[in-house]
Each structure stands twice: as structure tokens, then as C-alpha cells.
Length: 193
Image (cartoon, rainbow, N blue to C red; front, side, top):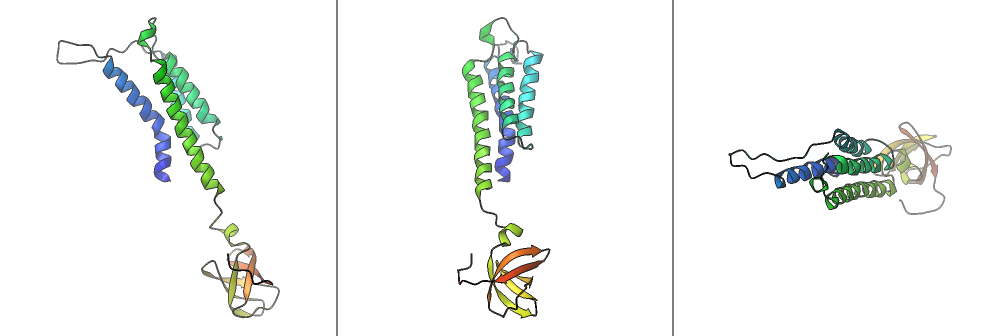
């Protein structure tokens, strides 16, 4: 998941850089000298600022609990910035609409894919920590008075109970007090979860 998160964070920037490089390569002039220079039209500061803002917002989405608002705003700013990035009176020298739509759709697809991964992870049951222990069943390893050792979730724990328990008896975890489980005898013989 760490590698996917890194991909989701840097994909929009890489896509924009690749697009600009491709457009620069396509706009090269047939120079007679050995140096080939791209013939970029004048670049608008507003368009550049919106593109950078859009990329920053999409990267910030990975770190902020904004439920997609920052990411979608970043995609919108990126799209508008790409429309305004080339400041020229001739419309043919700007970025073509299909390229802008493709970049916006690709960024939106990455954002939706990230949300799908987050949603799947959120729906999974808790498997560690206190929530995973509560209501688990186990058995008593040893018991003396109101405390002893129990085996729950593959581990031996110190335990306490209001009732006297016997070794081998099935118990249910009702709470946890730091490193001590509070257990109660299991009245029914339900299988261990």
C-alpha cells in the first residue's frame, strides 16, 4: 500500500511533466544549426500559478482529511491552468482540449482509485489492538483467586475476573486494563472467533 500511495501522490505531476515535454518536442522548429530548441508560445503567469496550485492541492489531498474536496479543487485548478497556460492570441498554439480533458480524467481516475483503496481498508475488521480483543473467547491457562493467565487470540495474557475460574475453562474478554484482560466465564459453548 505504501508504493500505491507514492504513485497516487506523484502521478499528476509526472503526467503534466510528460505532457509538457511531449508538447515541447512536437513544437520544435527545424533549425539548421545543431541545437534544436522547442518553440514554446509565451507562458501565462496565471496559468502557471494555477497549474502549480492544482498539483500542490492534489499532493496535499494525500495528507489532509478532506474527503476529496482538496483533490477535486486541485484537478479543477490544474484544468483551468492548462487552459490559460499559453498566453497567445492564436488559439491553435494553446493546449488542445482533448489533452486537457485526458489529463483531468487521468488525475480524477487516480483520485478515485485512491478513495477505493481507502474505502476498502476502512471496511476491513479491526485485527489489532483493544477492539480486536473485546468479545474474543479464550481459555484459562492457570487461575488463583480472582486473577490468573488466559490464552486469547494466540497469546497468553494476565487476566482478572469477579468469579473464580478453573484451568481449561472458556472465557470471554469484556474489557482491558492496560496489560490485564478483564474476563468473564463463557456460559454457552460458542466456538472461538
